[in-house]
Image 1 (tube, rainbow, N blue to C red):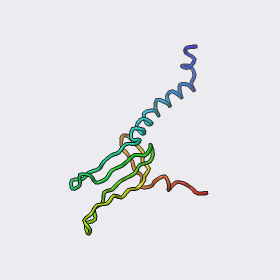
Image 2: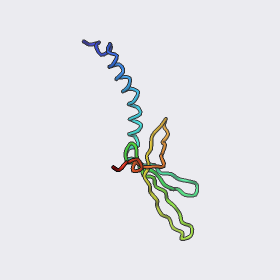
Image 3: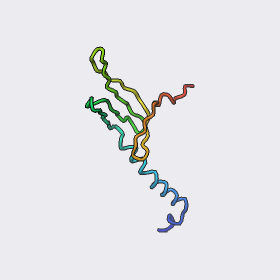
Image 4: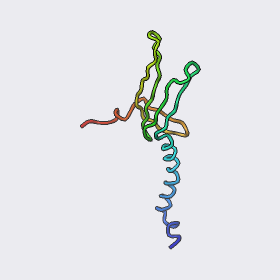
Length: 101
């Protein structure tokens, strides 16, 4: 009884699949409800990202209008994916992919 699972190829496949996929899920969940701040030499805070869930984020840009000498914040939603410890951000958000019927 004890070794039945070890001899079952389907059980082995399920265990291997879980072991391979589990680290990707852990990495994807690490950014959930977290924020990153971006800076440049001229601006200590230039913008940032707030991760809404494991596939979508809000991108914030702090923009400076030279003519009126004021700053304003522009925000937009984007999809993202973590690949080999790099965050890849799409130009598009989830609403671009919904099909209305």
